Image (tube, rainbow over all chains, first blue to last red):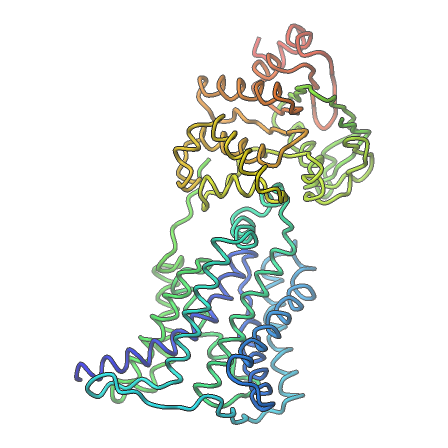
Amino acid sequence: MTFDYIVQQLINGISIGSIYALIALGYTMVYGIIKLINFAHGDVFFVGAYTGYFAAKAGLGLILSLVLAMVVCGVLGVIIERLAYKPLRNAARIVILITAIGVSFLLENLGITFLGPQAQGFPEIVKKTDFTLFGGVVIDSIQIIVLVVTVILMAVLQYIVHRTKIGKAMRAVSYDMEAARLMGINVDSTISATFAIGSALAGAAGVVFAVMYPSVDPLMGIIPGLKAFIAAVLGGIGIIPGALVGGLLLGVVETGVQSIPGMSLWRDGVAFGILILILIFKPTGLFGKNVREKV
Amino acid sequence: MLAVKDINVFYGAIHALKGVSLDVKEGEIVTMIGANGAGKSTILKTLSGLLKPQSGSIEFLDKPIHGKVAQDIVKRGLVHCPEGRRVFANMSVEENLELGAFLRKDKKGIADDMASVYKRFPRMLERSKQLAGTLSGGEQQMLAMGRALMARPKLLLLDEPSMGLAPLLVREIFNIIQEINQTGTTVLLVEQNANMALSIAHRAYVIETGKIVLTGAAEELASSEEIKKAYLGG
């Protein structure tokens, strides 16, 4: 195994890993604020991919397709929260978790009913060109776009969460909902904003994923959704930088395993193995601290 | 300023407040004393909109506020500094103070108030970039009070500000409460430390199992044999 080969696998791993990271952010933000694993999140990703598909077919370019998918998914996220989760705000957590699984099935089956179960080819909105970096290491234009999109969205998210009023409200609500209310923060609209942002990121991830693996189908969100869930748990669920690191790490490990001759079928197995190991040995994730309460 | 009439509050099937009535006049420090679980915090939570009374009325500045959501009540100038401080430990001191002014839009006024909070609590200025979770208990109490002041309260509800603090700090906190009151903020104070509370308050209410059992001028209550026996340790 040469150095070039390793660098190449690293590049491939980082590009799929950034997609996992984008989806994982939505999981982690929603968990951070209402302690719900939103299992419908992977299906928001598929809606984003389809929005991109229709936009691209209508002749919109990459950036417009991305923006449109983010808007559609952001609105979808808010609708899901308002209709399915908000009425259960005071219910037991298992109730809302099961509801999330129900919403996931609903979206998948609506997709199959109205869009058909077959995969559709994604129009070529980005011309794939290879750039040779050094030796045999190649990066293609789509991988570059994935990285650029991820970096920009991360920067925007970081700005929103740390510098804006709504971001501060989100952090306050996720830390202590009742105290946030006493500050005059509207908790319901803060939760909606969190769903909107997380879902918009999943929508963007859906589009870049469909550009990279040029096809869409209504069940395409299941595996990336689960992988992103693993990434979020790996990094420490509820912790935003954790989702980023978890996503990239998972992408790299997966690609690494796949690149070992004879091991390519172990890719998903290793990903789920990581989930099991994390849950056994460090359930709070890499960035998670054991919560100690100061009295 | 505040008129509470005959409110009843339930936690599920538990009847937590049974027909509580009280009033607070502008410029006063009014204290509520009583044993653990008597319903003092429940009264404050009902006033600030975290709990809804099943019946009865709450008027603040001559307008009904019962049934309003917490943010509307904060906007009117009724601000609740909760028991246990409840600072946002994952955010800096400065961010905590900014959140106190969440509903305000007057940038200049917010900056002025931030400066006066720092003047009142110099320790907060020293630690403005530090995470609130790293502060000591006394500092967290100061931060919680500073954060509440950032909302420009007309009426400040303080729930157990002396809880878990060393005696010297308790004295300091009570001095600050008096100062806050003297600069024009009306205070409704809930305390376990009845001695201290009665020493700075104008009037007091005594709560027992969800009912007000006694009320009067703070000095009178402090010298009443009954109160001494039940709440002042002798």
